[in-house]
Image 1: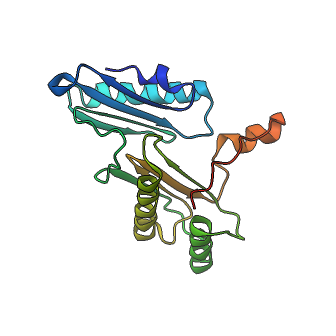
Image 2: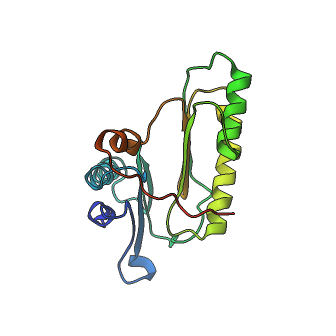
Image 3: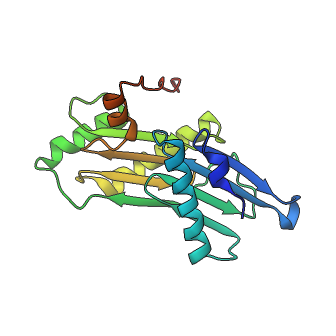
Length: 192
């Protein structure tokens, strides 16, 4: 197995190929949530690797989702392509007091600017071109609308992108920046 944990510690993302191509090649992508420390990212990917070895030894295609990271191995080259076949949806069983107002706030957060205190994030694997990333996020928004309407929180874990909202701060940098006085990273360039 390719050691994706060591490769993903620097920028929380790694692409790797093992073998000479053809039948003996294995392709891999590891992605951590952007706010994770290098150490936490490495530990998360290592845990995902252990999950794969324990539950899917010898499999030619494996997707392993953890709360803040994702690992994908395959014998077919998927690098740079939007994987539309795999996703995992996690949603809160708790319901908001005012579902209509809450859903409106979620829609505004995910599509525009929100006046409610709802936290959200979106992230694509770094191998995707911008257009494929946008398609993945739009598809995830549709999945979110289908499964998560009226939920206090929802996570769409796709192979190529992640989308999440909660009513509480879930990004590690939110608290780390506030307590350490460290400047938050610059926002990603606009994808307009």
